[in-house]
Length: 533
Image (cartoon, rainbow, N blue to C red):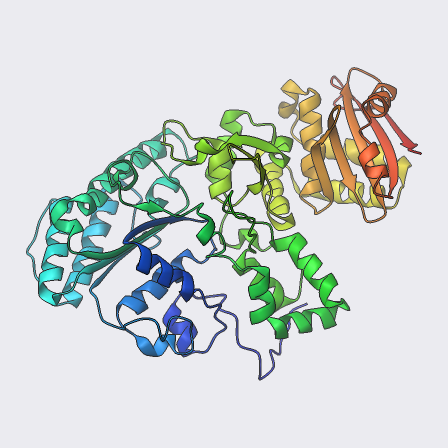
């Protein structure tokens, strides 16, 4: 359903703008984040913040721009209004969403043009130069001298000229390397002694942290607050903020769905909550854009991929030969997130920083982190893309997967074998060159997960790992897969290892399912269901 009438009392949601000025002048709903901004400026000078896309990085850059330009009227009624001296500073902004980076030449030209346009705004002429480093340095010095104020530099999505070329083949990878060197030289200006002294504030955003870009390898006073507990709920919306700022939207959604407020929030949590950005803080935040789409359109569904798909991540997973079901439960050392380079991209760190995985738990002291999908929206989105991109799934594949899920839900056991075989027959025969247990396991997991069924893989018990559990409101299927062995062997393993015990303790109906695949015929050899008492 699409709500057509917002009502006179409901502020519009800023779904199509990251302009702080537009949001404030048009009286759109704004979740006040200015207390975190004030803390940053008060406690330091140079910051880097990594967050997934669509989490408000560009809006933060835009807010900082208006704050440092002294536009007091835009901050009326916000936390920072009475705490900030609205003095105008010269501001340079580099938004790599709008700077060409198709190749090194266009990136260099784009940076030159962006600098020139901004310098001319302050009526400064510094002459022509073919040296980007020199041009940037002279621009900052001239700007400080002309305005007689220290300079503010805001850099949004610094790593986009690198990330956009990953997973696109060798030639594009070469472009990523060359673009990295240009960024290294460009950002290297900001560590020079004569420049540091005239900088008032620097804020850099991105998704990833590459060591060989000099802002991280050479500029030692840049504070990375990406995993600091004080900023864990800076971007994204906390549950308290949702209840405080969106009560009218929540009330309307509850009424439409015939939910109580508790039921409504439980559903919202399941779909859009779960992002945790610090080991030391247990704060969890919601994806802001997805949440607002849900409140605007009144539907709990996947909004995650409205702005693109993770091509380079899919390619990276293929390259590494990653067993997709393991994404449910990953253990990594915390040092993995410190920094990395193009020569050695750790897939787990990239998935975390891109928002496809998040911190679920950590050992005492935080040395080992447990990662998994943050919520249902991301799990559905990513698994759908993986199924289509990795296994060439077609519309038929999705259709048969839906029929399989429905058959399990309705306990139509005689139909399950047919639907599973239909899924496998819909996939290209060339994929079956290594049709081992992992292959069949992955197909089953992706087929159910991408359609929103609660399929959980590699479920840990005290005596081993269960292949998969499919959880419904009133029942749980406990599945074990075998190749070259009978379904009874799979059932016996479930019993011997006690895989079903944890689900029976929850009071739900438990159904054991052993599936034996024939690797030669590429279909189910034997299927057995058994109630568990």
